[in-house]
Length: 120
Image (cartoon, rainbow, N blue to C red; front, top):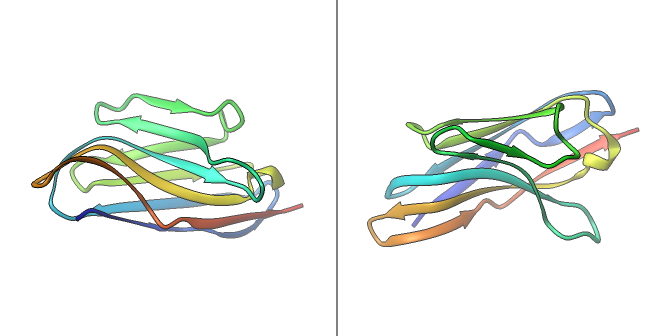
């Protein structure tokens, strides 16, 4: 079984920074892509940023220039550096691993989520 554990959420004032981290563990042979999604109260979950195993990144328009995703494929970790945070960034942030190959086959996995709250 694969587990994703997030850390780094919290409360920050507008304009501040936070860094989220996610570590994948289990009988992992490879991970195709990792990313961060978020879900604000009353809204659908949305993609924030993703990174492939060869380093290609994709960002939501709302976070371009403020957030940076990075990945250590050897350690199966992914980080999200969030700068210039805005109140509208407040949400539960979820780590996601896609195209995960384990001894049991292929699948995708989600973390439990970490709360990010940005006060105005």
